[in-house]
Length: 193
Ligand code: AMP
Image 1 (spheres, rainbow, N blue to C red):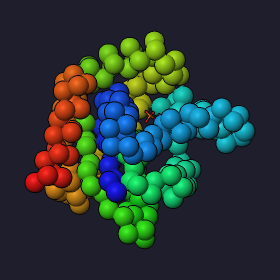
Image 2 (image 1 turned 30 degrees about the vertical axis):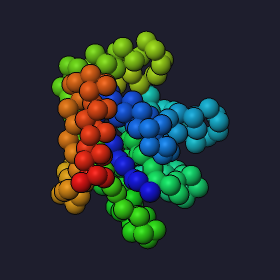
Image 3 (image 1 turned 45 degrees about the vertical axis):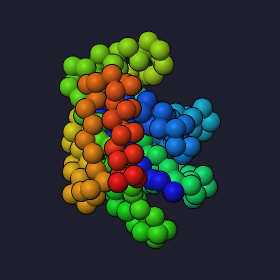
Image 4 (image 1 turned 180 degrees about the vertical axis):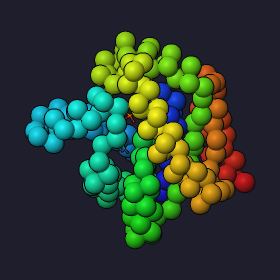
């Protein structure tokens, strides 16, 4: 069983790397952004609320995220998981820590991807042409990046201290394949050392 978390600002490439690693390690990829976007398609009252929040670049309430993630972890992740986009707030971090402890689970790797804002902006604008996401534009990116800086990055620091030898900073300015090689090398070095 292997449990992995990806951290990093919007557009850092968390989803790309999580997807590659998911097929390489045969582990489920839990992208909370993807899960929320698929929930929007249900078009019920919750979906409308979530759609509005995502379009504004703000964060969806913790209770919704905690329920979604714990449900998925119980149902689909008995071989492990790759979390992408969760936890994003202190409350989510505390919820996850309690969930892991209660279920006797541990984190094996945390990859925190960092990169320059100018590159993020360029990537988000390129992605908006391919994926047609309402929140992929310059203005909303600023709100999303602020949420990251003010909230998510703070809990990233908590994880950096708590999981000192499981936590790895990854340079997201590099090419996709180079980043993947670096991540695989870290996993290989840990497993085979
Ligand atoms: P992402 O695809 O990870 O960039 O997420 C897109 C949007 O979904 C975010 O800007 C938030 O509005 C929402 N979202 C995704 N994950 C979370 C989370 N863990 N907590 C709160 N909101 C989230």
